[in-house]
Image (cartoon, rainbow, N blue to C red; front, side, top):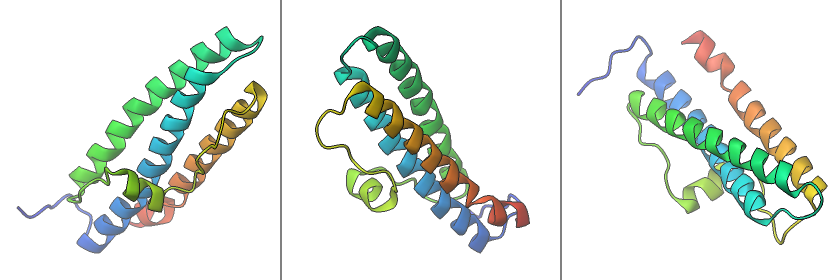
Length: 127
């Protein structure tokens, strides 16, 4: 079926590809946040444990919406660990960092998602 949503095919493809990178970054951040939720220790445990749960829950919703937007553009959403590994700019954590380092890494991860999303603005704005 031909898609006609007022965005030409090459721009739809470029936007879907960019959203694939946003999806991969978001999924990597989700996984890192969930890991930290499970493994945080120390005097900030309860506060961080709860905050990380809220964050990974919000990320799960965002991930689904991003994937559905990719599909609405006529592309398939990347959905494998190998695809995410190739597309994401977020690095996997080895080991379990201290609680303050977890916070710093998650801030950096959110900044990465924002930068990836912002890189799509020119093509989206012109479409």
